[in-house]
Length: 282
Image 1 (spheres, rainbow, N blue to C red):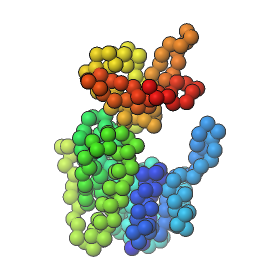
Image 2: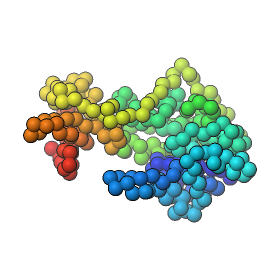
Image 3: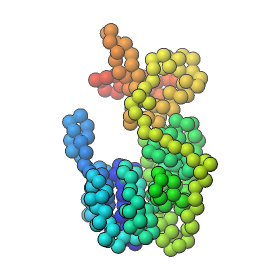
Image 4: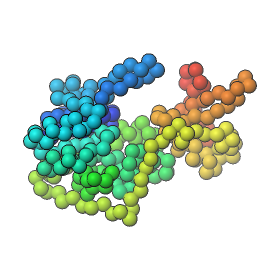
């Protein structure tokens, strides 16, 4: 099989490495350009590029996919795999692959379409999530389903970082199992049930803010507000990062809320980071 892999962050890198190690290496990797990272703005390659270079796989990093449209169209690729690439794929590039583009999406579609399915599942208090493989069409996470697999994520303590890694591994397993069967014509794509479709959004720093009044109530009284803040801390760290403000020496001081738990119905903070200082365990 000759295919293109579209992906950028660590989630995609995990899947790409598992594909390569399983003898299913792509002929080409397409990822986002190198970006400045950290306070010093050091130009850094995305995880997928670093991994592709480790295995001597050709890499393209177009800012605009129209720059590589002709190359994709003129090369006889059978299909593509897309996992957390971060850009919309134009219809003329989708149509360049006879077997289509297989999208890896870490939710049980049609639930949680969009950019933040893992965070949204945690915030909603779900007990089960999973991963889905679909054929890309002109709408976001809308195409027919090839395969899906569930994951009971309470065993991962509902934390984004652990759930993220578990879903990347699960997605790789499912993709490795599904690709040969799909290419052999053993799988018939099934349309998604639009009646159950839900959509996610990108979360900003404003979404991750916890007011001092709500935090105090969650700690002293508990109840729904405690559960809500606990889920927010689990879902929105490390990005965009959950935070609050408190008064210190007559001025507002930003405090990151890094870890918490519910004890006897009340919120208990476990780890915080005061602005300009190192994280501290409470």
